Image 1 (cartoon, each protein chain N blue to C red):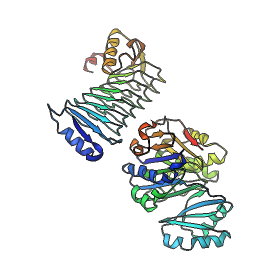
Image 2: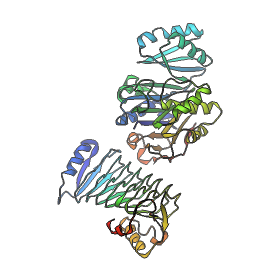
Image 3: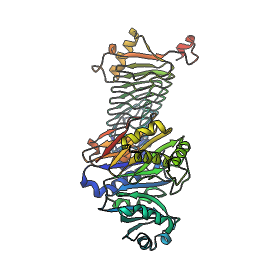
Amino acid sequence: MQNFDLGKEGLRALNSALHALKGQTNMTAWEVVNPKGAHAIAAGVDAPVDITVRGSTGYYCAGMNKQATIRIKGSAGPGVAENMISGTVIIDGNASQYAGATGRGGLLVIKGNASSRCGVSMKGIDIVVHGSIGHMSAFMAQSGNLVVLGDAGDALGDSLYEARLFVRGSVKSLGADCIEKEMRPEHLALLADLLKRGEADGMARPEEFKRYGSARNLYNFNIDNASAY
Amino acid sequence: MCGIVGLFLKDPKLEPKLGAMLADMLVTMTDRGPDSAGIAIYSGAKDGLGKITVQSAHPERDFKDLDGDLHDAIGQPVAMMVKSTHAVLEVPLGQLAAARSALSHLRPEMKVMSVGDSIEIFKEVGLPKDVAARFDVAKMHGTHGIGHTRMATESAVTTMGAHPFSTGSDQCLVHNGSLSNHNGVRRELKRHGMTFETENDTEVAAAFISHKLSDGEALGEALESTLTDLDGFFTFVVGTKNGFGVVRDPIACKPAVMAETDEYVAFGTEYRALVNLPGIETARVWEPEPATVYFWER
């Protein structure tokens, strides 16, 4: 276990050490203490390591993550796991604005609530929120899955492309071109897998969710190109 | 950008530490706005006395014999405490208006920062740590206070363009964001007799709330009115003699975090600003909801 005191050693030293991990490493477990809301903690990691941050983080924690599993034992500030490529980010507390924005892959789990614009412009990431999400979430979301065990705020999925949105609770309002869709067996199977990977199996059953997606009226979608997404 | 911090104390035991806590919070927010910084502190009212905080670009000249000159003008005792470019003048409550009017003749270049029973405002161009040191903020005591560090967008980097803005007795407001209809609202408020010191959008928001309060609205109602009448991006934190309020616009791009314990209610633009507060580990920490008014009054 590599222990890192952010209060003593500083953010730049932490991120330099993490960026130096290339490919296989035997320094696979990291613990970061005293984060105190600092920005960009463990941003840009590209190695199959396990990082635990003990406390709450500021802007862009785990941004651009590739391969790593990053656990935040607190709440996360704006833009957590922004543009994640792969790996897993698990937040025990709440997440601020635009969690998982533009994410291209990997899994983001938020065990508390997420604020506004969760999953904005997501492009392949899977996001599982145990609580509720704020307004304008999944705005212009292109692909990937957003699962919400609680409620969604105003304008869910505005100008949505091909991301799938699953909400168990109420949706305050749907955004332009976002509609409720039929839940088919393949969606139930997908949802069961996401709940399991999102550490939420036993908390909710797939049948309790509604699926929302694009009405495909707002963008020039040609069904023949669907396999490209 | 811009950084806001605020503290409303519930536990009087913390009152001697208010300035030290606020200064620490404000310095943490330095990278959100290095242009200018300011603080409004409610240090409590003394029986029968009111306070006028004034600012001068030439303090040696303007503050020399100012207490004596003001005493001669209003015929009442005046106490003066000079802190760098600012001075706090204590006069009998009934003489506040007369003193303010006299000051405009005695020292025409001097600016009035705040007037009231309890409020004092100190603000200058520069980094929060320099501004806090200049006014010895860490030694200030009080019941509640608000600080701001500015990244200027809507008007020039000047002392008068710094926050907090005070447009009514014991009232102040700080702002993170920018307003798009401030010229129209300013014209409307001028028709109602409000006066303005700057071209700044935030001063309009402050005056808008002061105008609503003078019309008899409660603090909560006045904050509610900003949601319908002010257009643009804003997180506002406001102070009154007994209260402390927060409101964010419906889009809520401008970040805000709050924390509450039995001892205090705290506001920070970022969580970083709150990390050194006592008991923060077990405090209730949340983001204020968009288009929702929060206020605390004692």
